[in-house]
Length: 233
Image 1 (cartoon, rainbow, N blue to C red):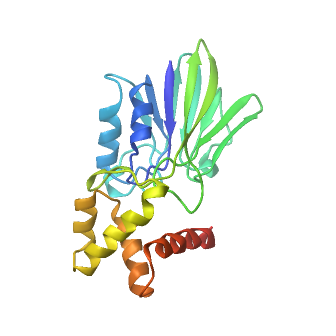
Image 2: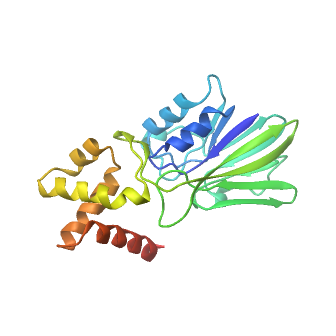
């Protein structure tokens, strides 16, 4: 069987992630989903009756009350322990063969004392310049293989406001220009985001740079966004 392993979606479910979930037989989420809507969308795009294992992350607030902070389960004879933050892994791991955690947004897989420690990274909103990743586990008769999935950067997916379209790097200046023109007409961030089907955080960033740097070009805004990401790293 194939199990999709993801974490830290943070209110963004990318189409590439949905496609992976659709062809997997189980879904494992290590927390920081950030909204009930995203959780529902993940469950909807999975196979019918596919098992879904999820734990609560530090950004999963009131809506996630009652969600477990750790889980143990077995798939294809492989014993799992699932938590959000690695620091919350118990000292006694029992007979767990694979320990899955998220939180750091950094992909990692390591064999330690005969166990696999797997962090699928983040496949939601990009943090600074870190890659967007998830994993697929191939499980059979108590054995496993790990497949790392790298996802191209782009403001795409299902968020709070519905479907979001992808913005390729080559199209970024043109998209920024469309946003600026609408902003100059007095349109709100919510309206621009909805009309152009873009992440509102992305739209807000473009508008803020335009306001604070009068006369900046679309290409200049893109450059400043990249500089800001690098500076925050």
